[in-house]
Image 1 (cartoon, rainbow, N blue to C red):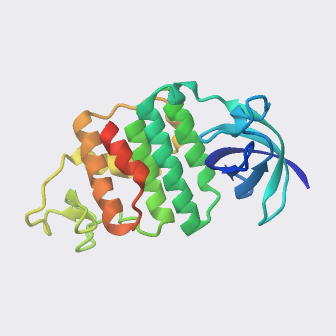
Image 2 (cartoon, helix red, strand yellow; image 1 turned 180 degrees about the vertical axis):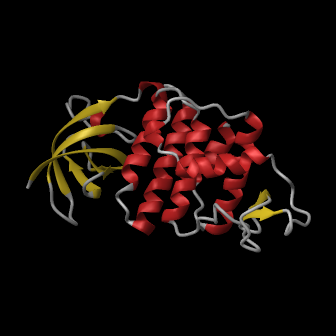
Length: 241
């Protein structure tokens, strides 16, 4: 069956001297493996559009649960700003690896819109750390380990939330607080907003450095403790930011 699909290349594997296999995340069909014959050749018209971290349109002979075959490919967005900045490449590489792992556990293709819109917002120059944390928080639901956003993790109370703790696994109210480090109340507000906001609707980002880094540190520790995911790209990203 001949299909035209759009998607983002999560992984690229050499195949012989001039060909390669790419894993493409698509909205309609999830992750598709595509054989790209001759696409590694410098003369191939499909070379650029089939590179790792490319957002492209693909005409393929589609085979469900099997390796599809590429007919042609065209770039949708060259992502020039991202590919010209090593730090942004680090963010997108991490998000790509994380998304690949999330799909293996949840198989929910509906995360495609959140993923691709995050990439496109990073490309426009919006804060990559905030966008990354927003997507990470949304992915916790897909991984089945999202903490309660509206109540204390200890008593279930919905008022007097004063901090958040990765070891305890979520928000903590004043009544249950012991020796956990208190956080700015905006951290609580922003975490809730991060989860509920539609990424496509974001046009500006105004978050103080202190709030950003507090949220990022919490999510880093939470991922380490509850997801079981250990990604090399995350370690590389930490060295860049």
